[in-house]
Image (cartoon, rainbow, N blue to C red):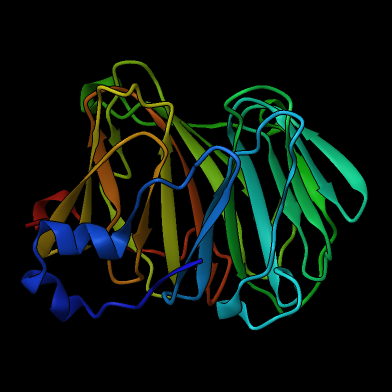
Length: 275
């Protein structure tokens, strides 16, 4: 488990490209036959990737930074299949998942294992601290209501699906959903916003290998950018905008943890105020 310490916004101007990427961009999360995790001190979220080989399930083990006997002793977890298909075994109960399906696992689960039904299956993991236990539940991509937003004129036609939220799968603090851009659209979350009570992470996926997303971050008056590849994660502190434009359409999993679960508790930023 890699550790990322918190960053104050006044530190951002002094960071060069490599330092910026080292603090906020998570690369190489999906390695065949491994579970990889990153512990961010921003709201103590954990992002991870599991890439089991068919016939060789992977267990979600605890790690020394958690100081707990099991990974979910004091945490909750959401799992999204971003490539392929497979299943997650939670304390002996198997949950089959297709591409883009989501599984929530509540605090206290003792044994979590990932199994691939086909080569190249990737499970994305997002975990937050938890102080209450909620039932394990599945949200199917095909069954979740899609909210259509954006316009062709502004290159941001997209669908938003909420999986783990106050009116969906219940959780202690974790909130998670997915945004899918229409072909020909490139912008996400524009106009942007911040949310001072929550940290957010974006996992970009469904992006062809020769394409990139230019992700905007930082305070609205002093933005920076990260050039992001397919299946890489950006950790967005509460003070940072989080928006991006791709050289091709893409999807991303957005996930949050923090003070509340109010989806609309944001501080809007006008496009004209960005610098």
